[in-house]
Length: 134
Image 1 (cartoon, rainbow, N blue to C red):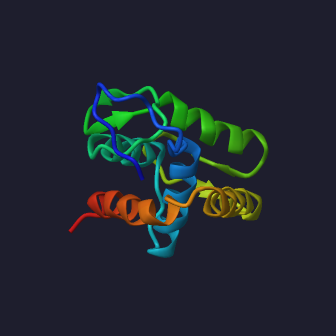
Image 2: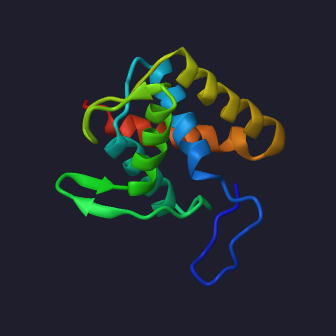
């Protein structure tokens, strides 16, 4: 994945925020961890801080971390289509089979269209591991 400094032009191979969220939900589930809206916000923020070229999302500081309306909106869309639910921004997101199908489709499409995707997955996993209490 291409990293950038503030003065560099945004690259063409920017990783979409929805792709990061879908991949995060999938990788967390593999390790029996469910993520919240705040967790997904923290993952996006952490990747951005590490210099990964991720689609910008609006973030604001909240007690204990960061929160993104963009993340909440995406989860809200999944809820509206009956694919899952999130009772609050701090509670784990629950996806049903339709929600997981969407996650898998997003990841599958990105794997075939973005050669850098597989190199980014370990960076997302690193952000998830930071959320797990030791």
